[in-house]
Length: 268
Image (cartoon, rainbow, N blue to C red; front, side, top):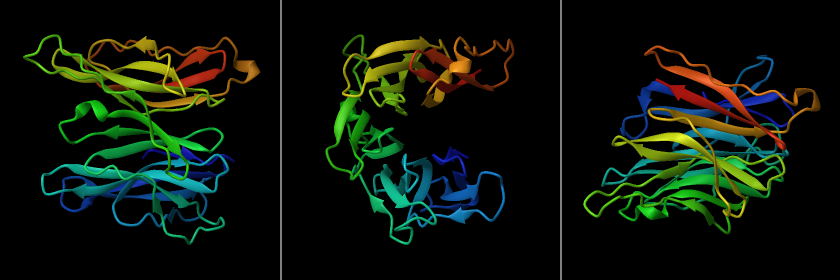
C-alpha cells in the first residue's frame, strides 16, 4: 500500500501491513516500509525503520533518503502517537545508519510527510490529541527537523456556543516549483467530517484558495502535483458519476498552468 516512486523511476517504496501481527495491541496491524525494483525483479528490501509502525513513505528529491510516518502506539490515556522519521534509502551512502526522528509531537501525532521539490523542507500534518484542537493542521519544517512552522491550522466552525465544530486540514503536497501547497480540508457534513475540499495556499501559508468542493459524503485523498508535459495541455480528467451505492475510488486530475494536481475521490 501507499506506493511511492523513487525520483529516478527505478524503485518503489511501499508500506506492508500484516494484519496477523499487532503493534503494542492498539488495534492496527504491524507495518513496515519496503523498497522493490520498479520492474518487479529482485526481492523487496525492508528498511531499518526502527520500532513502531512505519507507513506513508516519501522520497527525497535526490533519492537518497525516505521520510515516513512512524506510529509509536498509545499512551496510558489511549492517545495514539506518531512522528515523522527519516532513513537512508537502500544502497546509498549512509544506508546502514539508524533512522532519526524529525518531529517530537507527543502527545500529538505528526504524519503524512511530503518533501519539497528542492529537498530543503518537509510538509506534514499534525493532529493535537489534547483539548487544544486549534493547534492541529498543516505544518512544514526544514529537512533536518528544525524550524517547524504552522501553515494552515484547524478553525472553529461552531455556529453557536453549545456545539463545538472544527474543520480539519491534512495531507499536504507541493507544486512543482515549490511555491504552493495543496491540501484537503474536512468540513462538517450533517454531523460527520468529510475531507471533501481541495485547497491551495502559498508555501508561507498565505492566500488559501478553494479549488474544488466534491460535495456531501465524499472524501479526497492522495494529492500529487506534477509538471504538465506540453503534449498534455488541454487535458482534464473528471470523476464519473456512478449512480449506484457501491464505493468507488476515482483517480482524477485538475489542470493548472503549472502542472496537473492528481487526487483520489472516494464516492459513495
